Length: 241
Figure 1 (cartoon, rainbow, N blue to C red):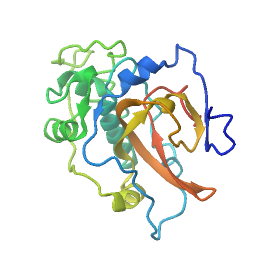
Figure 2: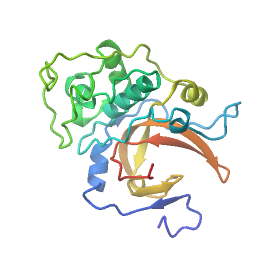
Figure 3: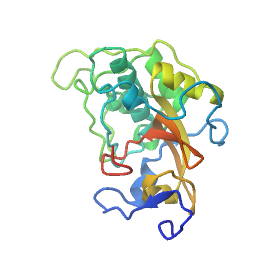
Figure 4: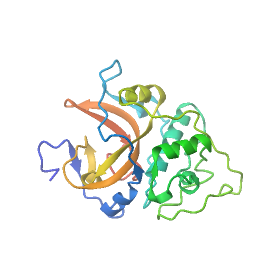
């Protein structure tokens, strides 16, 4: 239906089951959406019409991750925001640990979902370990207890978020342009599961759930404004980067 629509702004694709299924997509949507569901508009300000954090900070944004059969998008968005921001600042921590949040953040629900404000409050108070210390092991949906040591037996050292808070829609571009990527969330509809490329706009299907991703850019194409986000459904889903 999408690909046969001459007015469609995006291309759909039937992914092999080893990459993603509709049931898996539903399971991966594990973020509680707070506030309104309105799409944040691009602002008319003195920032560039097109912006991509990967181009502004070459080599600083880490690769796409895969949360697997676990509703841990809330943890991935926090960890990826942290690792991107730290990398931009020149801090050589590498990837940050989603598993640390999934297993240890008792304010959230592991593979059964979480809330943005809870996960950031936890990271602000307790910090987050590196993936080298606590690599991700919840791809199957199993959540282990909070580790007392790194997997190699060394002590866990966590990095705390210095400052947390919500970003108003009118400030989204400014914050991204000046400070770097950050977590955003939206309600996923069934047709988003088929997204391959282009500017996604809802076509058909019911609701899968709330989903957290990382905002990395914006642009306008054929007078249609869009946001660029980094997902956590693995490198084989979505537009190639």
